[in-house]
Amino acid sequence: MDAHDRGKQRVKRATLVAFSALLVKLVSAVSLVVTVPLTVHYLGPERYGVWMTVSSFVAMMAFADLGMGIGLLNQVADANGAQDRKRMHIAISSAFMLLLCIGSVLSLVLIGLVALNVQFPLIKTSSPAVLREASLAVYVCLACILINLPMDIVQRIQIGLQRGHVTYMWQLVGGIGSLMGILCAVYFRAPLPILVLAYSGIPLISTALNFATFFAREPDLTPSFGAVKRSVATALLNEGVLFCLLQVAASTCNNMDNVILGGVMGGIAVAIYSTGVRLFNVVQTLITMFINALWPAYRESHARGDHEWVRRTYTRSIIGALIVCSIVAPILVLLSPWIIRVWTEGHLTVPLSVLIARGIWLIVDSFVGPTGVLLSSLSKIKFQILLMGLYVLIGFSVKPMIARTFGLSGVAWASSTLYVSIVALPMYWYLTKKVFRPQERVSSANFTS
Image (cartoon, rainbow, N blue to C red):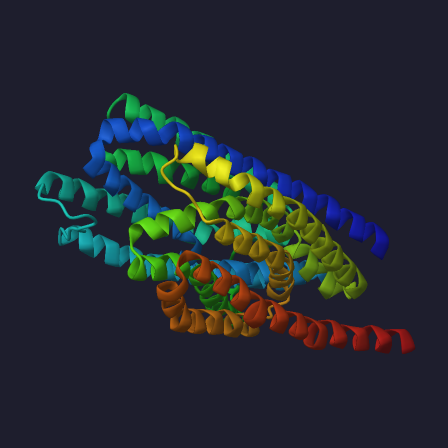
């Protein structure tokens, strides 16, 4: 297969992965719409608050592996591009055994907490029964997370091999099973720990089945202790910590405005601001699904030396995202007042200036998002952490003063201005000077030789 055919296959697989991820998101949204009123009714306000808090632990599963899953994804994609199954097996074995050790140690800690009957005061309550039930629910949730920790590598491996659609199909099975489990728990009015088990335990079964079937078909990649290399495990851990820091920094960037506004202007300001932001975040999330699908393809093609495909696909992804955002952003700005009025039944009104600033943010992100995916796929992480760290540091320094002086609009425009000056422009410089230019020199050298 020549470079042109490989490029067509990459795009085809990435498209399949993106639409599979979209299907999982849709099922998740439907599940949320269906289960929220049912669980509120049968749990009651206090226990429902515990349920929502415990559910947040499941969302934290992305950080439980300390970022090593993303590091493994890059290693698998790199070895796939080099057609080196032995190196891939070493990376998989090293990651699995390291996560198994971490999970085992944390499991012993969890068993000790259970033996000591340690309770978790997740919410302020005067009911000992609710506190006991909440603590047991936390134990069930944590147990599922720890069991999932080493098995979850199968999803990273599949994505690294550009078979992410298989991962998402198994996630779809787990999501539907989880929904059925929650409905059964509601019907039989099961205690909160059983509800948590249905929510996080059934997807765990789906992951286990995916793990077993994948390695049954790929026996040469099955993790083994003899294939573990300390240097590889250390490299995975180091890169994983960097990815974990980047995720934390990016999450802080996306949520810091609510924290600042809550402290300076109060909860109502947060409600107004976050409602306007959410509409634009929907578009951002959809675009991110398609852009993220290119991640393993970038790494694999880079390993093969297909640098021209990387540059061409990256450019097309930015142009596509820019066209979509440039069309959708003005439409959202115009329709958002009506949408928000209907959505909140007239209780909230978002200033037009906030919506315009957020529209500009969305257009700028059509460059930052694809660029971040490309840099991350090439393990260019430290510079991204530096930019996000500067954004957070400067934002927390100046935005409180801006909020006091100019209110919601000032914070929104400050965010867009800082995003352009601190993140987008330096990222463009780094990409052109430190990524693409070295690739040009390599391609030129190969041509000369």
